[in-house]
Image (cartoon, rainbow, N blue to C red; front, side, top):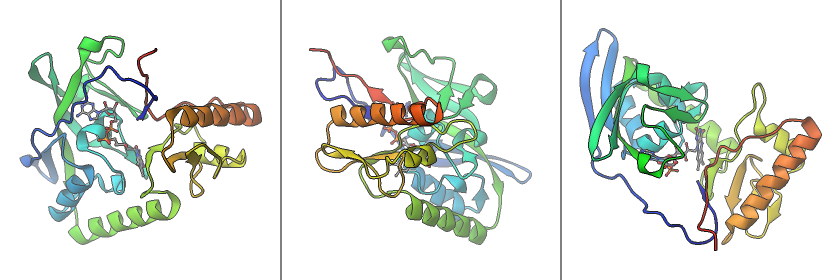
Length: 245
Ligand SMILES: Cc1cc2nc3c(=O)[nH]c(=O)nc-3n(C[C@H](O)[C@H](O)[C@H](O)COP(=O)(O)OP(=O)(O)OC[C@H]3O[C@@H](n4cnc5c(N)ncnc54)[C@H](O)[C@@H]3O)c2cc1C
């Protein structure tokens, strides 16, 4: 998320109600596991690996919570979290509702459920937990795959810097990072904000960066890619508008 500079008439909710992982059922080689939304995604992945359950190791190295990963349908190395979801529970208007897969739509960094309605502020829904279908695998192989993915991420992405991950979505059949790099945006800065020198699709808060500078750079980058390649990049990072004064 990228919050605009200024006043935000918002209540921030940190859904840290519980951090549980539970076995729901076993169906042959498949195992259904329920995880709380507030669980850090890396902890969940380590738990699955320890239990010799395969299917989500491609998400290794992605920070954030299980709930945040579902809300964004986080994905990496050919795996998206939505691929393994059987059911999602949401808190909405004072009670919890559960929806099976056929009522949920996972797209590229998007998750749509029966209460999704971005225009209505009273439509607030909080993911509380989800059920995942995993497959039995070999513990050693799962840990090795996770280590490999994490290493690849560390080598190509500024994983320890202050960023919100990739700022633009990859256009069909292309990589936003490649297009941005070709336009000379790797390392381009404005104020305290700049595109990473390691990966051009990561915008970093280098030193007390402002959203004003970040948004300027995003517009500049989008215009550069559009004039060079005729491709209009779409934002992956969610911009949170502030109160207009
Ligand atoms: C170094 C780095 C690498 C990354 N690499 C990848 C990658 O390879 N692939 C990828 O897909 N992403 C990547 N990301 C982005 C990452 O997916 C998101 O930052 C993370 O999944 C969001 O989880 P969060 O808990 O931090 O959510 P936040 O950033 O806090 O929130 C993100 C959105 O989800 C909503 N949300 C969060 N929790 C809930 C909930 N419980 N219920 C309802 N809505 C909720 C928020 O309202 C917000 O709109 C990367 C980020 C970084 C910093």
